[in-house]
Length: 146
Image (tube, rainbow, N blue to C red; front, side):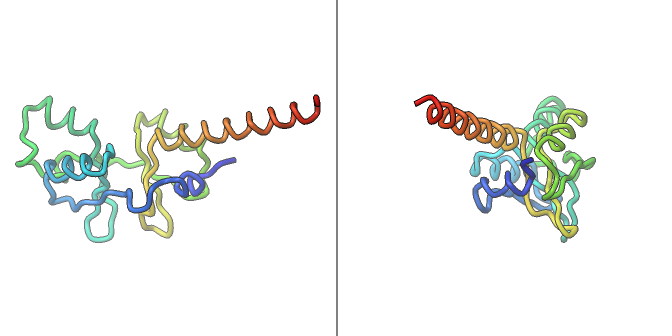
């Protein structure tokens, strides 16, 4: 079974976006736009304190009429985090995401964040595995029928 470690191997290096809790929502939005990503991990010192996502922006800034320049991440980030480890399976991650209704999971190893997996990362990994399996089966069938 595919693990979180397998998924992270296929991600672009340096993709993890990190900001301190004192950064503004505007800083987070700019970083997400620059990197074409949907979330920023919030780390204070060496501690994982939260995550700020596009969903947080829509629900905690836009709907409340706040201004992204004035609001600090610590005030609007998601603080209740679900984390996974390198040896967790893709299926376990998808189960957590479905039950918790989240789209991003920080990956922790040795008490430090080592990456982030999104629902898109997990689905893409599963699709690649399925494509490979189908290709192998087609080659097997073609080889045995000729």
